[in-house]
Amino acid sequence: MPLAESPNCLTKKVKYFLSRESHRDACLLRLLDELPSVSPAYLFGGIIRDIALFGNREPLKSDIDIVCDGQESQLRSFLEGFSTKEPFRQNKFDGFRIKTENWSIDIWPAKNTWAFKQGIRTYKGIQSLLETTITNWESILFPLHGGPLIYREGYFDDVLRGYLDVVLVENPNPIGMYVKIIRSYADKGASEFSRRAVEVLRKAVSEHSFEEFSSYEKAHYANFYISKSIYNQIMKLSDRGVVGPIRLAKANETLPLFPILGTR
Image (cartoon, rainbow, N blue to C red; front, side, top):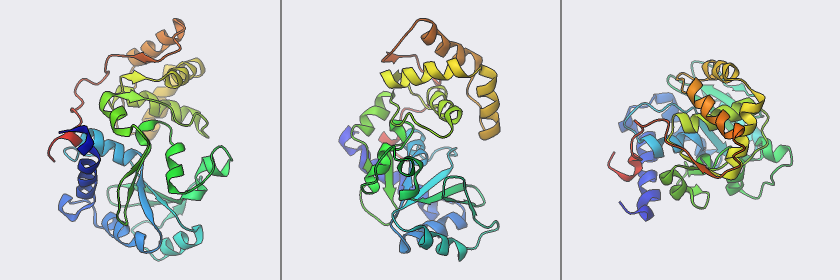
């Protein structure tokens, strides 16, 4: 399928993920149906990336992030009236977390995004979120209220060729950032790294041991991909003084060949 058709194909796959046909849990479906009546709302980042990489053929591993282009008071009022088995709670980044039967969902007003509140990035509209992600692979938004995908320039080319860049180096949880970047290589098929991504990887192994990464991954993820051999491979970049960009052999050779380009 031509690359120009990839955004439309991904849109169809996200819509299928959100559909009743896909047998997702009822609470999630109700939330996604009702939230756009309160504020423009967008799926953001990792869940869309994983649909792009893996399609809907296997259980997706990401939590769900939703950003709203409205006021915090509106969002709080909506969530107070939205019943689930577990009540919503405020998370540490001025957003809210809901647990449904199958998913952990973080919802927050776009203006409360950490990079905006810290003055690292300036909020100029919902597209500004694309400059706040850890990597270029999460720089994509799906409007729940309808409309086209919003994504970083070159997004589909980058994902298709396995090219990983770091968008925002600043992060309130550095080890969490490092683990996500390493997992992009270990699990998600990243094989080509920008100069900035190589710098971050080198910094990661200079600051943390393999045991620290492994412990963090096991505490925060259901599946574990950071092996000693992958850690040592990154260490070699540092030992050789590699400054990037660089291409590495794929760590996960079983990764499907981007099913956004095929059928459901």
